[in-house]
Image (cartoon, rainbow, N blue to C red):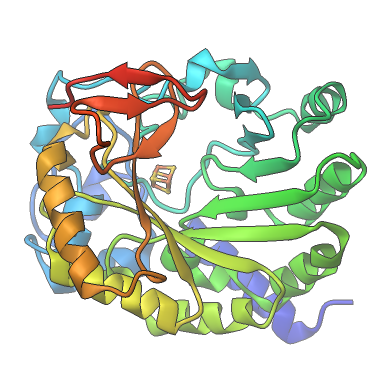
Amino acid sequence: MRTTENSKSTSQWKADFKEAIRSREQLETILNTSIPDTGYPLFLPLPLVRKIKELGKDSPLWKQFIPSLEEEGSQGEVDPIGDHLHAKGSGIIHRYKNRLLFSPTEVCPVLCRYCFRKNELLSGDDTFKANSKALIHYLQAHPEVEEVILTGGDPLILSDDKLSDLLSELRAVNTVKMIRFHSRTPVILPSRIDETFIEMISSFTPRFDLITLVIHTNHTSEWTPEFLYALKKLKQTDLLLLSQSVLLKGVNDEVLDLKVLFNSLIKNGVKPYYLHHPDSVKGGMHFTLPLKEGQRVYQELKKEVSGFILPRYVIELPHGNGKTFAQRSSYENQWLTKDGRWMTWDHP
Ligand code: SF4
């Protein structure tokens, strides 16, 4: 049975979610400035808005979360990483042989202006319409899938009961050995990592070979004492804690910012895993830096950060060809696809 304190903390994250800012008018009042209507939706937890206000317009937080006119640009792709080319319906995307993505929800704890799925989520098509029964049938027909990656939206925005039901269903498929969560929630809504979540997830770690939580964070200015406390609790579990970040123009493309981020992650028990080159997404092209510039930053970063701390710098190839290392290969302008072919591609 849940204790009173646990119930209080559970209601806390739900309350934080409920009181989030959803309209331009509300945001304009708090920030005391006009916010453009870019046609993309808005969702920002109140504590984050207060922090954005405190740090101001030039801050990495403002740039990541407050709408700007640059979102109206017509360049970029609606589906930059080719989700639809590998979509199986019902929230399933099967891009690599032994692992698949499942999107159990389209909802996020915040809407990031650079999001690579900003045109796809909430578009109403079947790609992100979750159906866990269909997932289980798919997994039974595809025993080669050993890892299910829960993405979104953000899987940790689901209640503990829903997550527990999903994990129980997945556990019943004996070919599924590993679960991976990709989530921005611990940083944005740290109250989500409460005692009941820790209890729930801890009850599942012995039942899979591995459960991994990949925490999405781009800059230490996103961090709060509550996030550090959430990490402390997560470290007490048997979860493997990794991070992913996106290299964003004007946000974290300075070597020092990345150095501080990755060293702080490792110090707090999280192994930096991926540094993504930004995807060419429509409405987010103003965050894209030339690949050559990204490679320069990463090269400099290598001199500043110990090898075991350095994340992999990766880029999604066009036409759904998957992720590959973003550092240039030994072949000029050639890139290794997920099925081992070399493709020629001139990235801007
Ligand atoms: S939390 Fe992730 S999926 Fe959601 S808006 Fe931000 S980048 Fe996109």
